[in-house]
Amino acid sequence: MNLIDKYFPELSATQREQFGTMLRLYSEWNEKINVISRKDIDNLEVNHILHSLALVKFLKFTPGTMVLDLGTGGGLPGLPLAVYFPEVSFHLVDRTGKKLKVAQDIATQLGLTNVTIQHGDVAEVKGKFDFVVSRAVMPLPDMVKLVRRLISHDNSNALPNGLLCLKGGDLEEELSRYRNEVLIDNISSYFKEDFFATKKIVYLPI
Image (spheres, rainbow, N blue to C red):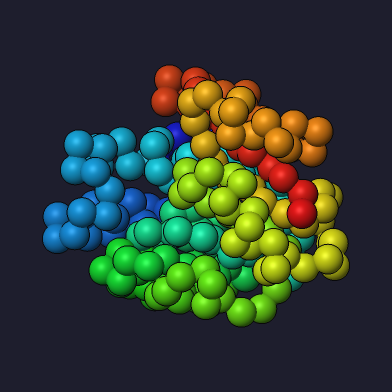
């Protein structure tokens, strides 16, 4: 919790408790189900929770915003964001049922009433969302094709509705067709840990 406290001193006592519980639950679940790489579980706070919360530094969602977390796995980045934004609704979707079981249990134990979970493909998702978030699920052009129909045109945030993706590495080729629209933000401008040196937030309005 030291780094979460450091970078987010505005957290309430309830949120701090929720993040502490989240760290414990992910570690406990990982002993039963490989939610996070077993080699990486010791880096849970930095590589997973803090990484998810980078989106908070980029855009503060307004209350009532609807967010789809595509390919959430065990609930990342959706669950950390749901703790930070209790007045924002998060719909978590993944095709791997056993990982969603972890996400559902953690959401329940944290008392998150702003989270819904769906087991299945994005093609089965109904409704409209202001933003779709993801952590390196698939190349951006593929994601745009899948989620365009789900993006609402009623903008209520500081940025127009669209995609918010957490990515790393060389993105030049992947993003080439969107070079005039996409915004790339270096997470290292927010967090100073070595892990974030090559990590980026990719925002594409739709």
